[in-house]
Amino acid sequence: MADIIQAVRGMNDVLPADIATWQHLEATVRQLVTAYGYEEIRVPVVEHTRLFKRAIGEYTDVVEKEMYTFEDQGGEQLTLRPEATAGIVRAVISNGMLRGARHKLWCIGPMFRHEKPQKGRYRQFHQLDVEAIGFAGPDIDAELIAMTARLWRTLGITRVKLQLNSLGTPESRRAYRELLVSYFRANESRLDADSRRRLEGNPLRILDSKNPEMRELIAGAPVLTEHLDADSRAHFDALCAMLGSMGIEYHVNPRLVRGLDYYSRTVFEWTTDALGSQDAVCAGGRYDGLIAHLGGESTPAIGFAMGIERVVELLVQANKVPAPTAPDIYVVVNGERASAEALKLAEQLRTVLPHRRIEVNLGGGNFKAQFRRADKSNARLALILGEDELARGVVAMKPLRQESGQTDCPTPELATRVEALLRELPAEQN
Ligand code: ATP
Ligand code: MG
Image 1 (tube, rainbow, N blue to C red):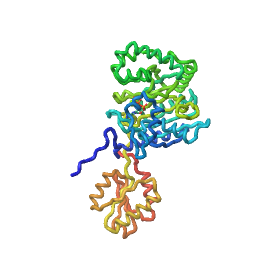
Image 2 (cartoon, rainbow, N blue to C red):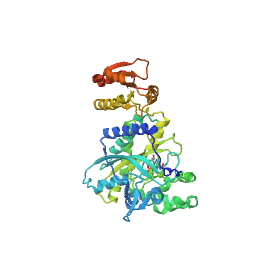
Image 3 (spheres, rainbow, N blue to C red):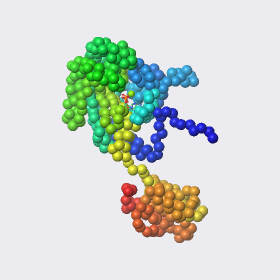
Image 4 (tube, helix red, strand yellow):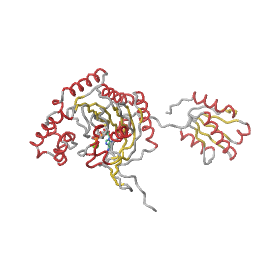
């Protein structure tokens, strides 16, 4: 026998048993972002490697060690997208969408990072990505965060906390950066290898280290918020005031820096205590410098990415998983002629009742076996069509989930009677 080919490590199938939760999350997200005026954009899963190198920055975990990069048959250096912002910004620039215009965009889809797979951390994972381009804030910052807070409320997720910080401008960061470098230089023996490398390239990223042995050293480092320029300070204070007035709770975390280089001013992250060490569920921030850095006209922007697998897990843990959908109707057939008629009848019903899920018993079986399948399918109503019903020009109707008898319905009235009956029958299964 041939060996069985497994999925690639860290890349998951979403099976039918779990799909209702994904669809529920996706539908909720789609409705929410649309209500806030965001438009969907779909960008390729593959981009030029240099786009990510330039957008995300060379001294990031993602670019240093997590990208799926390959050369295609034409000799192009390509990368499976590790995040969506770079591609969306590239699309906005290369499609000539800037020119002073403003865009509120969202997309959802798979991202790829070669990380160590573990619960909540995968090599293919999904993100909801939201970007507001052409807005200088702080009002859009506040609205974007309010939208994420509303998503948790709508989904019934409570175990999340909002952390907030400001990274200032690149100019104000420069002075802080020097303070930081001299602090870490003075403690160089306590730096791990990654941090030592970053000391030159991007010392702020040391603050984002996941290494627990670095925690104490990082806790003693100078704090960026104390070195903000006046405009960034005013931006941050206004954002805090707006969040306060909307009743959105937040915690200022001066060590929140985010993993990507292109952020400026506002950064935020929603974390949870419900998922163990993979505790970040949504992270974002302002990237006023990125668009110019990628060759577009200088345009302020802010966005966030949300980890879908982690939010799905939060829904599962909070028991906010929707019930699996069952058929409305199961058609039981008896005899060869009835079988052909049942298919025809089901097609007619599907035309008139396109919102109803109809399952015809396929592949035969005696009455008992067919009713067993009907029960197992959790359908609410059985329609029965045999030689006897055919001869009399009727279809028998039998509710399946409650004690009630079978009634005959003249075939021409079937759609109307079935719809009326389904409206009376309880929709929720127990
Ligand atoms: P982490 O600190 O968990 O590595 P990150 O800072 O690398 O996250 P971002 O690049 O900001 O993450 O991505 C935004 C969100 O996407 C994260 O908050 C998380 O919910 C999710 N995410 C990131 N990487 C993964 C992954 N490998 N598997 C599943 N979800 C992920
Ligand atoms: Mg990461």
